[in-house]
Length: 207
Image 1 (cartoon, helix red, strand yellow):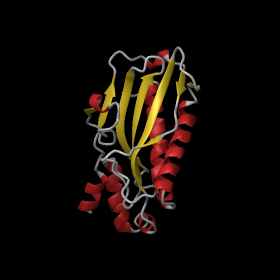
Image 2 (cartoon, one colour):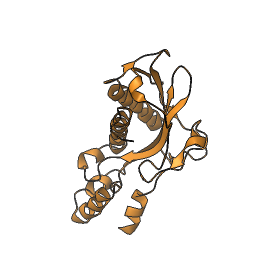
Image 3 (cartoon, helix red, strand yellow):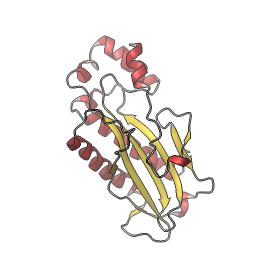
Image 4 (cartoon, helix red, strand yellow):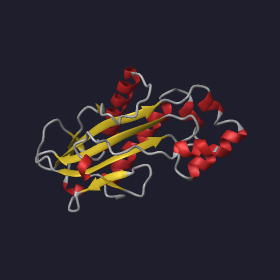
């Protein structure tokens, strides 16, 4: 149990090849261990956003393990789709820079699929429920559940000035058995959570 909880608590390092790497600083949030926010940024002044296709990180500290190139691309495409849907509820999605326009660069830096059968069974058996309840209480991942790590870099689309960035890792709710039926389900749940969280941050709900 201790080994499982320890594994669930790991967080990605700052990805050295990211353009924002020099700005990132440690935080107290283990799901978002490195971040940067320009002190004078006012996201309320922005009305539109450009979201390029999600890049797949190829630096030496990438964390894809044995995940296939097909699954990596599927997650990257899903990330672009989900972030565009969520952020597009408040900001106009555009293709060209203009006044009051943000650019959100997304990079998939790592991912792991859920372990078939084991991830589902561990969410049903009593001992698994205990471990996953502990993981949920501490913000950790569920046993044998997949996860996704990623980078977000927000800049002023006209000037290229970096306004906000973070490197983070997310998964499904540790007690959510429905997020463990398919190999990429937990990672996709993490993407949805990431998109919702970023939307709140840009709206000023959290810092």
